[in-house]
Image (cartoon, rainbow, N blue to C red; front, side):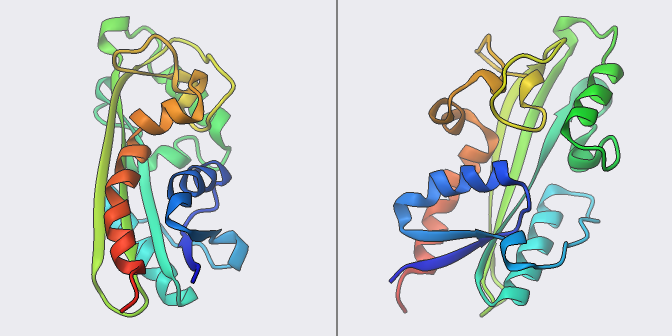
Length: 200
């Protein structure tokens, strides 16, 4: 029997990544917007706190198994910013404005001092109990001086993964899934999800 997994996001890019990676488990993936769920206020000061809050709230509201992520960009030269505020770094203006603000903040910072990492925490919650499974993924890299590439979303056009010369926005889906923070956390989450989907 096909089970439905609610992804607690309104970001279509993220939803497509989760559909791609979880497809082999035979689950039907739906997004929070598809069900008309209210937005959850991400007011925790850690990725773990926000992911857990979203997963529990969406599981309770929908009656479905719910997976939430909180992810963001951590830039060393900016003392960890934008961090948990990555999605709204420039307010509610969207991805392009966020990237513009980031590049402006790093203006004058030399190549060797532009180290950064993407970090992702996934939380899986059930409406039937209080247990939350957490997995974490990290992708080390550096911030480029300008946008390159038309794939991906968010900060992908200015993030160059460690050991690569291309930005995340130049990588195909398979390449990105293999090294990205979300790909790592999602692969680690597969075992927890398979266990939750197993007939009791």
